[in-house]
Image (cartoon, rainbow, N blue to C red; front, side, top):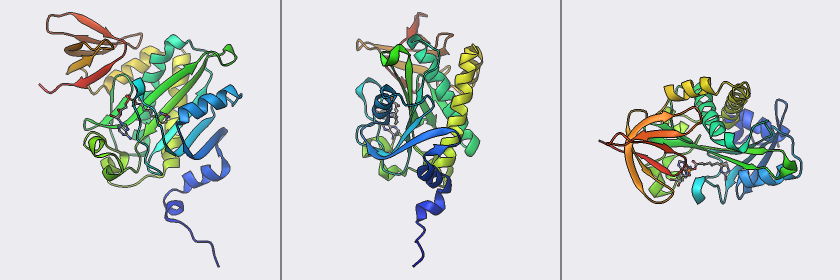
Length: 272
Ligand code: BT5
């Protein structure tokens, strides 16, 4: 009896090819069915000596991580949940620049394979029509061979239907499928995003953060809008977004004219 061709194989030939060959061009791709977090797995594999450029990807995550202890919902088979092991000659203080560079790459990768013109929200969100489509979690472990290993984690809702997410999240989240009205081959999307990440990291290493910043600003969802910043100390500051600076820090100007550099914490675009 001939082998049955599954719907997924028909819809996602490139994804199927990657999952069979464990490669994407020259790059090793380690595909898991289910893991806790691809960032945690990538960090563990990096400690065991996995090559720079290796991609760790999962069909689903039981403990997909966001920033500040938050979770990333990872419905099985719908999205791209992956982490790239990198060892660029950068310092851990460059992390915020890497996060911005990767956000830009994600935006451009999505735009390459679709007509979706998504926007960036500092520091790590990709938004479409003010709903979150993707997030970046950059982590480092400088104890690995004393070489700074940087793990670039990306969660991107590709074929995710609203019903696959928790009720609370469904109203605030979107996907490429929801935005474009059709499904995508996740392998094609992955290849486009990885190509763009390589491009932006190369730009960063060429000391062109200025160029990255200019492109980032051209796609800033919040520039000139009012933002409410919940500081790590729990203080609420409302101000006009002035966008990120040359170090990657966001600046907001409050009603009294004071400029607040934002290092971390939560930011919401405030309706006025
Ligand atoms: C992020 O954190 O946006 C970074 C997310 C990074 C996830 C990837 S998946 C592969 C890799 N392995 C990991 O363990 N993590 C990375 P943050 O800015 O803290 O946003 C988290 C918030 O986004 C949550 O509190 C929810 O409000 C929202 N959220 C969770 N899952 C979502 C989803 N699937 N789509 C849209 N929004 C989501």
